[in-house]
Length: 334
Image 1 (cartoon, helix red, strand yellow):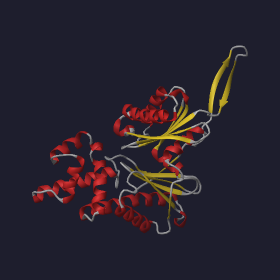
Image 2 (cartoon, helix red, strand yellow; image 1 turned 45 degrees about the vertical axis):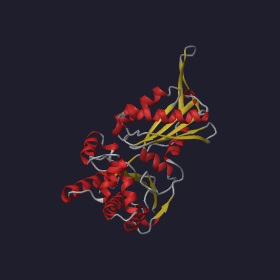
Image 3 (cartoon, rainbow, N blue to C red; image 1 turned 180 degrees about the horizontal axis):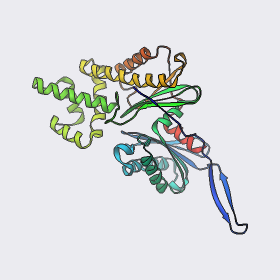
Image 4 (tube, rainbow, N blue to C red; image 1 turned 90 degrees about the horizontal axis):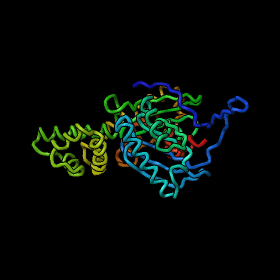
């Protein structure tokens, strides 16, 4: 397992407008604090969470829409989902788009510079009066965890870990997508569960208990039907299998438990890799867990905590100080 060091952009933005004076033949800069509404976005491969902050910094609306990871769904589709979530918030608050002064969007997949700039351009066009800041989902998650040394594990459609040591250095690992490595993620778990269920069907001539539950709850009549959909749209299949596996594990299904036990070990390895490379004193490590996989299964949550404790015995679990969407909004606001 390897990790790499990255510089995370400052959460402070100063907005300036250049004004040319023909009378004095000089260029002046006018500076302004953001006094309008601010949208905060946390976008991943399964859903988009959005919140609206008023000029006083109070959260006045929240909404959820579809996936907005541009690497997985494309920049146009991702931008549409963000617009959809933003419009829901604005409608709830009785506001309009031109009242939005800034947008902070923490989006999975925007470690790719081209995708990041593509999202910034589309959101700037959709909200022409707003200053748009695009961060990766991991940067937003790290900001949400609060100040000081911390490691954040993000486990949802994809998986990754990011950490900051006492000197402010930041390291991350994972988050490379399903082709290169989202080990232990909902996508990974779903893919393994489907492969295992299909193999059991071939070997035994009938579906396992877990296999039947996967087909029933996802609404497929046959494995061929599911496989054809997965080839065309894997994100519409494999992450949706995770809740089925989670529920089965809580009910005592051994196959489901084996799959989740392996995933817990892989996720703990991400955290351990960041801890080793960041040089944090192990007794000082604070671990914050985020993402759609958390809190979905008593069995999985217990196995993940146990795996993290085996890897980092002195680490302390902590709650996030705020949501990533709120962290993104505050980064854009100041």
